[in-house]
Length: 153
Image (tube, rainbow, N blue to C red; front, side):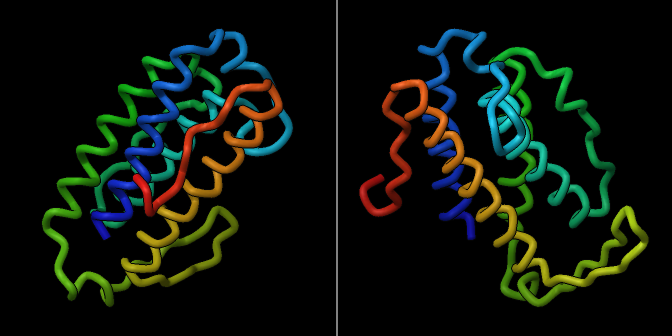
């Protein structure tokens, strides 16, 4: 599981570098789809990762307002903190965790049970989905997107 998380972090870091060459106004510009902007999309994937990982550990979720994020450096810092936490959890991973169950209650009061493995798979695919949205937006502004090629990374 660590291998695919590492892939996602590499792609995310490449997007951060890509963003350094983009006008900050372009990073904050409202767009159709995703979380509404390049910067918000990047924050959102790190935020969702930390929410799920904190829930699996039974530790408090960090609550940050998506709309208060205004700089690339803020997002990078939050992403690094989240990554470190996730790496620590994954370093303790054993095959027994794959079948361990996590039960959550949604805002509407419905209860759901997932294996830890399913939650980690969700975190990974969720980020891949949002990176695809970044690629579309990059093309819309005429700039080559970050490569997400798993094989040649």
